[in-house]
Length: 132
Image (tube, rainbow, N blue to C red):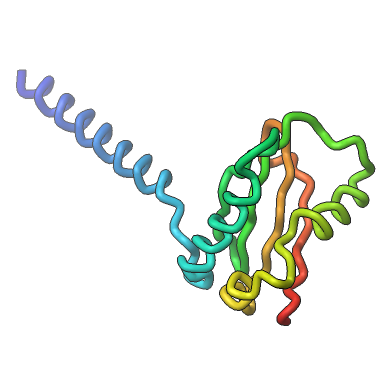
């Protein structure tokens, strides 16, 4: 009976630790060099841009030295990858008149990723900060 109790307690503790890790992983904190406000501003900017239509903004993540913004599309674009990158820079990246965003991103990179099913297979482009 004592052995069963010990095994049960160990299993329960491991289970609780597993939930703790899952909760921490679900909360995507900004990395040490990416301010939380910059991440929020990127999310606000893209969320309002992709409210209608078939393209869905899936959020931004902090990466070392910058922010990656992810947009899911229903099907791959019928363009060569280099043309897709140009399209992202010209049409999807925030415009120069979005000064609050670009000021918030001072010293940080902003990359826009386009993908269909899996983020790991995205086409991406780095947006040029007009204030830099």
